[in-house]
Length: 150
Image (cartoon, rainbow, N blue to C red; front, side, top):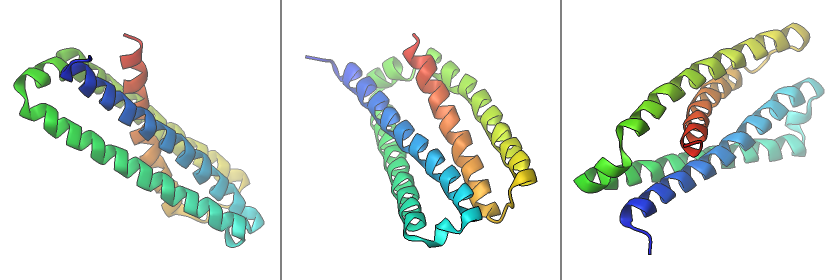
């Protein structure tokens, strides 16, 4: 029978995995919506489906962030569990993952800047939100990959 420490770690990684799946789908749908604008497809039923998919992905990401927060609260209440799960290595990996967030945000801005040279940029709010979500997702993905590599 797995210990409470193993269960907490497994739950944390499962929540993170599901968050990253929602994140990847959000990025793909966001780019689809961006390029649909040129052909007027955002006003068509397919555009509405993409918008609904974006909403579902955002709800999924929010739910998994909330689950992570509740798990962190549970971990912080138990000193033994906190010591085992929130180790110095964990904090180091979290800090290193912010580098990926910065790079991903910068690359997203550059991507949209280059795309705007060939394609009319009409929805700057979507571009800003996508940049924020990509940065946050890259931070979590970097942590996930580094943690799994151990």
